[in-house]
Length: 441
Image (cartoon, rainbow, N blue to C red; front, side):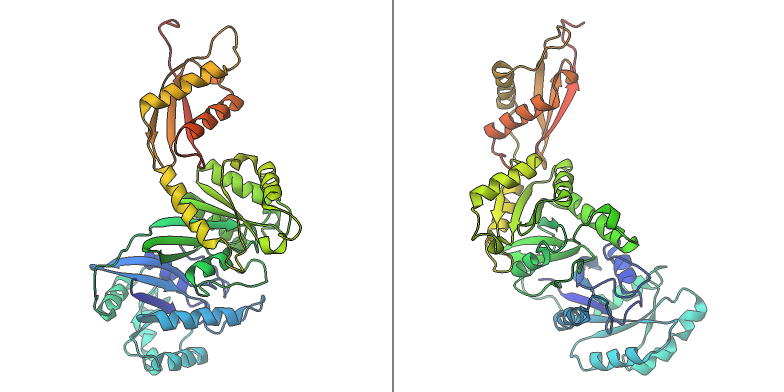
């Protein structure tokens, strides 16, 4: 795997801002309040012919109202144990604090390179004041500003210089198959991810809303690279009380858009609700292959059957009637690996391209078996169809009048295409285009 560079420091020194700046995009949520970042948030960074995994962490010494500070500290300790290089970030405006001294003492005992960076040095006067951080005993401090990109390139140069020499064969640096884990709060997303990772990669707590960022976790599973995206649990818009919740919601939607496959986790101990339906519709609107993960099966299996629940879920989520359903218990690890195998299969289905001749034959059969309603004596006609792209399979259909093909008939055509070709479990995008025949001219 890639070498790891962890950014650590006390709360609110600007770790997430620096992380986003070095990554070149907004990954970690940035807010003025302390304790926003809780899990380890990572992204691959390429710089000067080297690639490493940059890791954002929670604030050391944070105090959290949800009483999960101990879990955050565990995640930081794991980050420190995994890191090949550590960037210790301090706040030049605050000067050396007692907590900075305590953290520095911890880092000096570690047998690995520690780079000291004094953040928020937006002015020359602030840059000149970084000298006091020599007292931390971690070498020459570098004045940086994650907000204004001051000396971030210099910091990247120092990181690359401190990385261990690469060994063995070249490392695979891609994200592989991207799988987004979405669902309402406490549906089991983080537990699912930890089961796959084989370790407590993200915080799991009984407190709802523990996960705030969308956390990318890059793993090698049976020789294949996959990226699992753990997302914040969704809630009703009326309950989104502030910027933090809004950003978490926005990151969840963005995670769906950039995923190859979506795992929609449902908590079987409660009824399918509007939030579940909205997530299903959002995934469907963006034509994402989706697996319905019926989680917490261990809580309900004594009083029902998978058959009964399958009918219930198809009734509640009719738009995803074609999507596969897997009954899981993330707590027990039941059927978790099967979800990953199925995700690979759906991704394969989404990349299939079918022959034009066979596609047109199937659509002609649709008209022969069941014709759309005739409007104003104008018989609906299909002239020609072609699959123009994959991921998702996209079919353009030239007809005499798109309005003659109502939503019900379009669903019928989509079903026939799904039955005839090897993508039975994924969404198909169908685009109807008008074309006049010689009879209409």
